[in-house]
Image 1 (cartoon, rainbow, N blue to C red):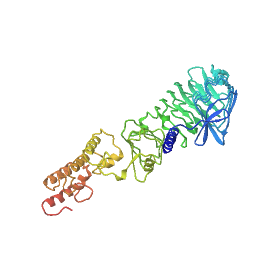
Image 2 (cartoon, rainbow, N blue to C red):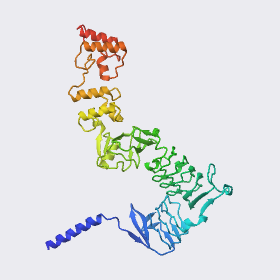
Image 3 (cartoon, rainbow, N blue to C red):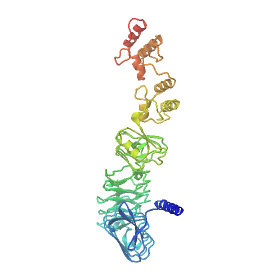
Image 4 (cartoon, helix red, strand yellow):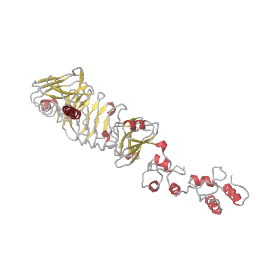
Amino acid sequence: MKKVLSILLAIVIVLCVFTSALPSFALSYNDFIYEIVDESVIITGYTGSATAVVVPSQIDGLNVEKISDNTFKDNKNITAVTVSSGVKDIGASAFENCTSLATISLPDTIIHIGERAIYNTAYYNDKSNWRLKKDPSQIGNGDSIEWEDIDAPVLQYLYLDKILIEVELVGVYRVREGTLVIADGAFKGNDRARQIWLPTSIVSIGARAFEGCKSLHTIKDLNKAQYIGDYAFLNCESLEQFEVAENAEFNSTIFYNTGYYNNIENWYGNVLYYNDKVIGAKENCDVVEIKDDAPEIIDGVLFEKVVIIPQSVTKIADTIFADKTNAVILGYSDSYAREYAETNQIKFIAIDSFEKCDLNFDGIIDSKDYELICKICSTQYEQNDLMTYLGDLDNDGAVDGFDAIILDLINNDMPPSRKKGDVNGDGKVDTIDYDLLISIVTTNDRVTDNIMFDRSDINEDGAVDSFDVVYLDLYLSNLKPIV
């Protein structure tokens, strides 16, 4: 009996482990197959034979928000589709190759429609649904097309209700008023398009909507869009200005290889900013520092290893490292950066716990730190504020050769002398210091090393001058002690 129970228990455990690795079960409602994600319904398939299909607004009391990729693809029976109000998203190729589908009704709640969603449908293939202009003289007052600088007298564009599906054009184009959504890839590859005017009604711009528009230099009223899809302006190399609404949803990919991205003036060190938000980071950088007034690191920014995050940052995207295994966040003990690191199980090191000279953050002051400070001094290693803080051992505002000397002395158990009158820092006050001090004063050489300055400013009046020479001479003559 015990053996049977053991076998049954083992089977139960195996089944539990196996089923836990499976995706959520597909559910069915009438002829629809769907999934529930975050308490909303996603339609993933259709098994019916009806020619007219109505996508419901709710299933089992939950809102239907999305028609997934390829849901109706290749269905030759459907002639009409009505999508109920509340649905927000239609996936890529959702109705592709539905060659009988001539009527498609979409609600105003749609904020995204994927690439090729209605490609090769009867609606798509009906040339009467396309606006085709072969001669600029044929354009009536009701058309909102500008023909300035257009190089060829052909323009085609396809709308589906209030959604701009596809455009084939050169030159300048004004999206008609009332348009809510620009579909994924709508302008993709129009490498001669130069100016696009968006209407005040625009809500959403799809993924890769303007990809490859290499001549595009102006997007008017971009700040009206609330949503901008991934890689929307990829390879728009002439697009140098962006006006994105403060509350718009987008990630860093919309800037990739644009004129803005490639303009070095928009970078601060290894980091790219838009309205002080972090939107990019250079590749192959072990240490990246965010500037002090940055409020946010947005989605799509990937750091290689170490990122220094100031207290000004109060919002960070879920994933900012390509690999969290070797990731390190440097921040202050009471900062949001620490909270973020702990939540995401990323190694965190408190900046305010660092010791001067520990330039590689390993908790040890040794020859590795000396090698690093020498690289910084010789400009072989890009400096950042933290490096300056840790390496500026004489507190003169820079990491330079004096700091390297001081660190070398520290590593050899010879801390630099701070004794008044010990101008050369050898631990003794003697005639060598007197001669060096006279040389400094008579040649008006500026003492850039703060520690050396403190040793030389004997009377502490804020200057190294002849008064200090007199004080040192009196001391060496045993006539007056150094104050």
